[in-house]
Image (cartoon, rainbow, N blue to C red; front, side, top):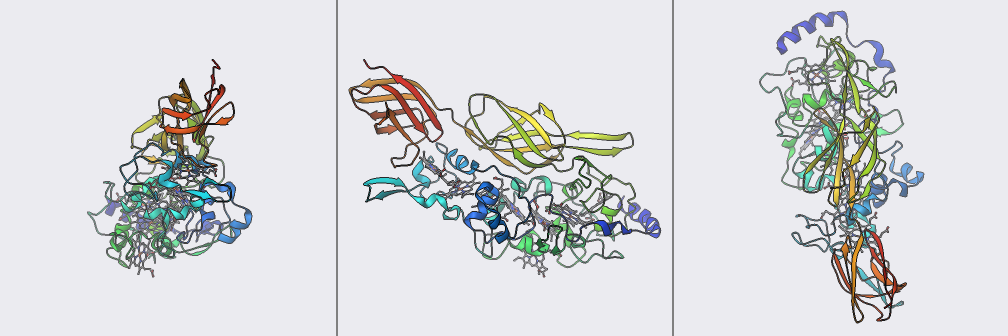
Length: 493
Ligand code: HEC
Ligand code: HEC
Ligand code: HEC
Ligand code: HEC
Ligand code: HEC
Ligand code: HEC
Ligand code: HEC
Ligand code: HEC
């Protein structure tokens, strides 16, 4: 089949490829509208983590300093605290970044936190070790970035964070290994087309992008993750290279950049919101314009005028934000999801056809809940979370056909409620739910008071607190848990 295509191509080549429309196009290097910005991230400092994980803590000066002058993937500020606290009561993973936690046991405050005695004031305070992300999450400066030392990355589950912009090695996606490379087969670099087309670096080359930022080359972007680099882990160069420098080299790259993902990467060129396969300006992705976009990879040898690329259809959607990233268990919640390409148009012989997205929620244990949207437009979607979700740290993704977006975290917080209070002498037993764990330190955000006076905690589980309070104390009883507060009137007789 491919040979036939190649032959037709030659005919078209005569008609002249690589028309001058490229001049209007900002490549190389390409724009940075899609996916993770291309770059090196293995020298991050604490404030850089907040750039993506809690962006409100950054000032414009920080941005200049780290050279990022465009919007990062949006992750709601503050969510990061909830994501950690959402682990309380769950089993500690193996391996774990918890500095004082033992895998297999349950996360408590002191798996992560330290209590420090303040001799001047005579009480314990919450130590400051939690302030620097890199106290617990490792990177190897200059060599490996924090995300790529995680268990999913080391297991070559790149889609866990990059979504369907890439495939995962070994997931069974189609790679044309049954035929040798032809003049149509893209090269990794140094394309053989008349103008140097026919390679990834025809567009993804180092240079200054439209925003004025320096984009490194593909070798630097990949090597700096630490994946497959010497002395980092058991992974080696062969994750990405087997026959480097030859026409075959691209086939190894297809372990992650298979036709299925490659032929579905496309941005909106004219800002009308909708991505039309085959109907966008050239230079904004891989399949916007046929044959111009096709030629960049296929060297101009593909007879691609108005030809749809195989496997193209559900352009990989991108998730930019959630109206809420923390919700309370036990009741339904309406969430608005924003992003791009939630709907796209495919040109068929019958005319344009729309493909729509839905949402998918993945629980900490991997269980999947599909959420049919209440409404969906190209850039936004409303979903209702069911009341039945158990507490924990979830991932939400937008799914269109076979394509999955990048994930955004969504934490289901336990519902804090007092169900009963009993008293024996000065001992109060409070039963209920969502109490989490207790940390006996000033500023821990956990504790129990009656009529404003603090009680001494004798024991504290997620569902029962036993505390010593004044025998005569009565009135408003308040439980302050890491997940919220609950109140109950204690009768005075
Ligand atoms: C360029 C944006 C960006 C920066 C900078 C960044 N992160 Fe992330 N991080 C992400 C994204 C995107 C994910 C995947 C989605 C998620 O879990 O939020 C992620 C996931 C994580 C995870 C979860 C890993 C897992 O196993 O799922 C950890 C831990 C993490 N980041 C820590 C850090 C630390 C520590 C820093 C600073 C050294 C940092 N991040 C800087 C974007 C960023
Ligand atoms: C899995 C690790 C982990 C566990 C378990 C944990 N924490 Fe934290 N906690 C953190 C991290 C990390 C931060 C800082 C997050 C940030 O900077 O956004 C934090 C922040 C805090 C803060 C400061 C909040 C703020 O807004 O500045 C307090 C107080 C706190 N934790 C108390 C507790 C208590 C009490 C418990 C047990 C009920 C607990 N934590 C359990 C990791 C943890
Ligand atoms: C005191 C230790 C500690 C600090 C400091 C810390 N983390 Fe974590 N973090 C953990 C632990 C423990 C986990 C749970 C996974 C594990 O056991 O390795 C975790 C998990 C995460 C996750 C995945 C949470 C999820 O949804 O399941 C992200 C993202 C993350 N950390 C980012 C950060 C960022 C960003 C910072 C700095 C603001 C930070 N962490 C600071 C210990 C820490
Ligand atoms: C835990 C989430 C996570 C996983 C899993 C993950 N990545 Fe990343 N990746 C990120 C984040 C966040 C960034 C930007 C910050 C950084 O590099 O640490 C990034 C950046 C990159 C970059 C550079 C940016 C770019 O667009 O060129 C490359 C290349 C990359 N990752 C490759 C991989 C490969 C290969 C795998 C699978 C073996 C993988 N990643 C798995 C989160 C992840
Ligand atoms: C015709 C020019 C062109 C060629 C050739 C090309 N790309 Fe792209 N590619 C783009 C454009 C434009 C984007 C969208 C960039 C953006 O806006 O973020 C893109 C985006 C991507 C993305 C997702 C975003 C990112 O930056 O990570 C991946 C992955 C990618 N290309 C891989 C490849 C691979 C692998 C090759 C070689 C087989 C290749 N591309 C060749 C134009 C090209
Ligand atoms: C995660 C994927 C990945 C891994 C693992 C990887 N590389 Fe690369 N490497 C690339 C990419 C992408 C390029 C750019 C290819 C191109 O444009 O031809 C590249 C280019 C190169 C080049 C030629 C360009 C240059 O001058 O840097 C060399 C040499 C190289 N890699 C060596 C290695 C070695 C040695 C290892 C193992 C220690 C390794 N690579 C591991 C992705 C990877
Ligand atoms: C193990 C998986 C994996 C392999 C193998 C791999 N890449 Fe990538 N590549 C990625 C990921 C992940 C990204 C970042 C996607 C994003 O921005 O979210 C990426 C991004 C790219 C991009 C977009 C520009 C950039 O630098 O971000 C190009 C071009 C690219 N890869 C080329 C190559 C080439 C050439 C090879 C083979 C030498 C290769 N890749 C091998 C995972 C891989
Ligand atoms: C980012 C690079 C890139 C772009 C742009 C691109 N392709 Fe491809 N395409 C590939 C790769 C890689 C292969 C696999 C080639 C191989 O291994 O021999 C492929 C394979 C194909 C094949 C053969 C499929 C098979 O069954 O083996 C066709 C036909 C094709 N592309 C058409 C198109 C058309 C039409 C366009 C433009 C609408 C296009 N491609 C744009 C990278 C690209």
